[in-house]
Amino acid sequence: MRRLLGLALLMLLVASQAPAEVRRLEVVGVVPAGADAPSGVPVRQAALGAALAQAVQRVARELLSHDAAEDPDLDLGQVLGGEPRDFTVGYKVLEDRGERRALLLADPEISTEYVLLAEVFVDVTRIESALDAAGLLLAAPVEGSGREVWVVVEDLPSYRAYLGLRRHLMERGGATSVIPAVFESGRVELRVDSRLAPPELMERLVAPPPEGFRVEPVSADGQSMRIRIVELPGAVED
Image (tube, rainbow, N blue to C red):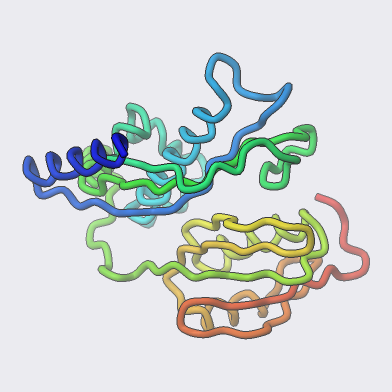
């Protein structure tokens, strides 16, 4: 109750001081746990920090100029400066999933991870100011260009298939972020930020498919889509 009251007061204070634009996001924070946990900070706090950083970077990437967005060496953390918390006006942990077998971290050497789902309120105006000062702000952002699409993947054959799909969503599907909300054996549910409606996004994924895989459409409506991933014979490990 005290945290919720503090969040409400903080947002009221920000609103009264400046016409800041605030965006609400739900993000997953994940960090190595167990023997591989970050040193010098409680693992839960590290996972929360990862969630805040992810929320800030998701918003920042949508505001980048086209040239900056295509720069693979761009370090957004360095561009923005400060800590991710400096670009938020509040947060709340929605679900603490705790320590579990590593599913979301790509490093095969890490066996355990700590995961939580957080609601983060990002100060869009402050991010715009930082990007503008660095000369990296999109000159004329298109209002309403982004949308959240819920992508349900059935019969997921492997973690490598998930990584291939994620890369395909970013490279071919026009996604600015791909966040796993549910990750189970053989199934994953993704929150995808994309400028495309689900039917258009599905078309992009089906032709051409990720290398070594085939995407089979199941269904799509105005807000979500269901697909299956088939691993083709002869697909090699990354």
